[in-house]
Length: 224
Image (tube, rainbow, N blue to C red; front, side, top):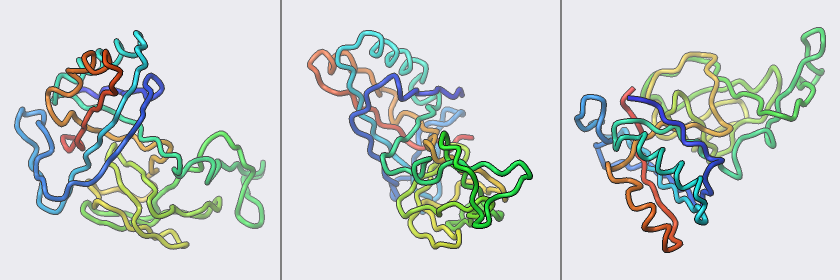
């Protein structure tokens, strides 16, 4: 299995939808060539991404090359999920310390303004847990909002409840245990996913010749 980066800047993404399918137990073919079967109640993220190329030759050919690199459901795509309302530098800009390694008296620092202040967990969370705690001090930063997305090791999570003290409830449950001090990927979340079928993208040229967008469906990759 190989990780294939899908660089968002090479495509005009017109629509991205994602949801957790709680009833299906199939998550695509794994390394063994057999279907990945998950436990009931785990849920599977499904992603539909719509691309438009405006008859751009270079982008179309790069798209087709990426589809071939995926080798059907064998390889794994690394997909950035961009959200206009994301937890990013506009919400929590990167802060810097004073020269003596201290912050201001209100526990904030100089705003670097070029990146997001990383969100870091403060305690161990076991696989299957749906609650984590994040560090909101040193320097002080805002907590997640309900609806924010983040990834850990390519697994996607959505914030469904939170409080001002750093407690966060997530869906779906943690796919893997995460240690204290884990940095949560927020800008953008990077999702590991496989094609939902071997035939994804095969009609790209036909659709684009009529000016229609191309839609690719991915499913969450559990084969780690």
